[in-house]
Length: 186
Image 1 (tube, helix red, strand yellow):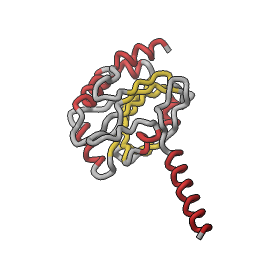
Image 2 (cartoon, one colour):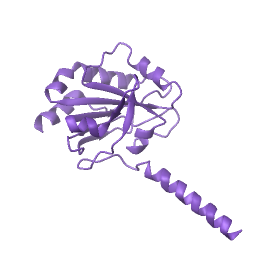
Image 3 (cartoon, one colour):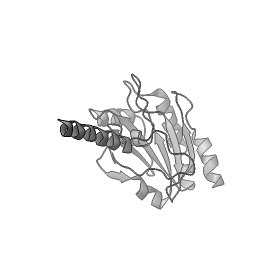
Image 4 (cartoon, helix red, strand yellow):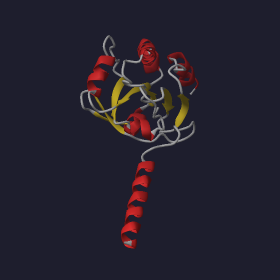
């Protein structure tokens, strides 16, 4: 019996340890290496962060995804980024938008989000089914009708974060002009 209880306790500790290893308690800070991840586009193309950063600076934007509706502030933010697409291209920055949510119908919700938007060539929308990225980056907004804290990171070609803004509310989004100002100084 003792051996059974010891084995059970050990199994529980290993499970907690494995879950903790995949979940960050805090988002990556300026000066820290951005955790690498691989997510898919709506077309099923796998995109790995480290492959993106090897080519250029990455603007990484965590959207709220689908918390029961299409977030109007996410829509405004993405439209602002699209409007400034040429400035991001001139700054040699790729824009990666992450759309988190439960796996069921996430692709349909993301397609709905893209209605009336044309993403420029250097923009990608990635799906985060089951919050893998969101948990890895410590951005899970674990409250009813919530998904992720809206967040923006600038990541250099070495994979290091040089700008970070995490909003713990629906507002407080990073504007394109704010990022472009930082990119022009780099």
